[in-house]
Amino acid sequence: MVYFIQLFMTGIMVGGIYSLAATGFVIVYRTSKVLNFSYGEFVLLGAFITYLGLVQLNFPIWVTLPMVILCMVVVSFIIERLILRPLVGRSTVINTIMVTIGLSMTLRGIVRIIWGSQHLVLPSIVPLTPMSLGVIKIPSLYLMSISILTVVLVSLGIFFRKSIKGIAMRAVANDEMGAYTVGINIPRMLILAWSMAGVIAGFTGIILANLSVLHIELKNIMIVIFPVIILGGLESIKGAVIAGFIIGLLEYLSIGYLDPIFGIIPISQIVPISVLLILILVYPYGFFGIKEIERI
Image 1 (cartoon, rainbow, N blue to C red):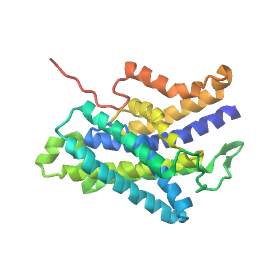
Image 2 (cartoon, one colour; image 1 turned 135 degrees about the horizontal axis):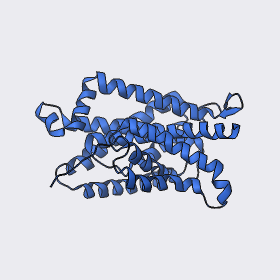
Image 3 (tube, rainbow, N blue to C red; image 1 turned 180 degrees about the horizontal axis):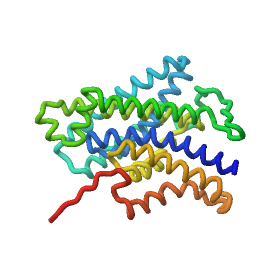
Image 4 (tube, rainbow, N blue to C red; image 1 turned 90 degrees about the vertical axis):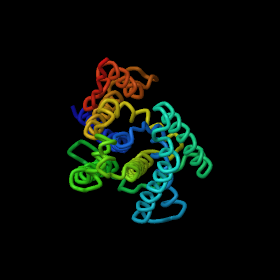
């Protein structure tokens, strides 16, 4: 029973990281309807900028974090303004997807040129001693990820419901043409959405880099994030959060109970993709996705 509880708690904590990452992706899709296949590289970039601040420039963490936020906002602004905005109204969905795939390769190449392909170690930003809940051990970094997720969700809730810009972003997400007719500056809302997603990706990268070594393959987080997004629904932040916890829980229960049975076959790595394939058949719009029905 203790073993199950340990796996359950770890799965929930890791699911919080997946939820955090998926939230940024959903914000961009809700506002701009762009499937950003370069989002994994945004996470990667945030992690390496943190390494730049903490290790190469020897900045303290309270200087490095604002630097990461500023850099991710600038990168997001440049990408939205110079690469994606010219495509608005001039390209199909598949063209936009191909552009984001090309963007992912470009960002990955930039990271490889600047920092190389070797494994790097990011200094721990939280105490290494795990927190004890009776016989259950919870790493401090997992608790930090849940704390960041909570702060992000509360901030987004207040922003989207109370602020003028947040309400404007909701209007753009619900009806872009209607938002335009009442005078909402849609390009400004798109920049804001991309900047918010970039900052969230940066925080996700910091957490993931602290969990293990820092490497170019950190971008593979998208293999897990896509099932989370599909499960929750492409336009639902609430769905992304719930789905992140579900995928994290399934992954760690698989690690604990299925991987020892199948030996060299990493069943836990197959679980997210298997869930994605099943969900496309059973819940094509996800749990909280918007169903679009066309009548002929």
